[in-house]
Length: 128
Image (tube, rainbow, N blue to C red; front, side, top):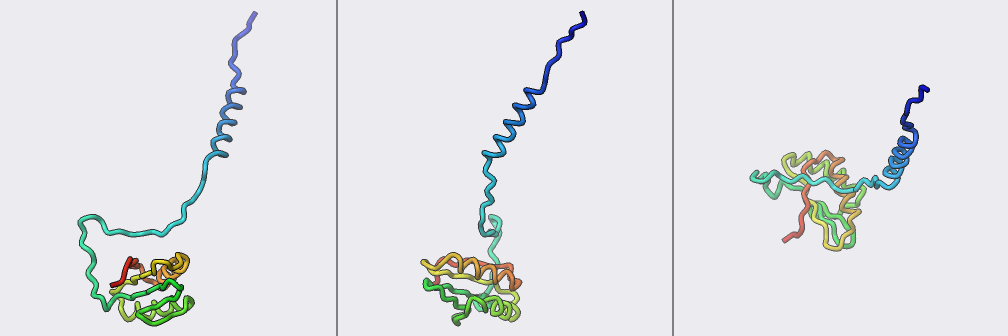
């Protein structure tokens, strides 16, 4: 008699595939949405920009937008920032949202500033 003992791998492969399906189904593939913030490395001095070179964008609690103390519609933010950035190429955009202002308006203003070609965007917590 020439009987050889063989190991059947089919049940083991079935178990492995079932575990794989279980881990894929239970894993959460959530992409968190956020804003990219670039902070200067520790020890590096902050870039010195005179105040008159900055482009100040204020957002009131009522949702009104002011660019350099002048009221602007949300649809005209990009054009105004492009014009001011051409006049002040060394300045940065400083966005000062009100304490109870909508975050959607803040994100829209920051997006419009990036579309206008400005890379240096700062958030101001309070204006004195």
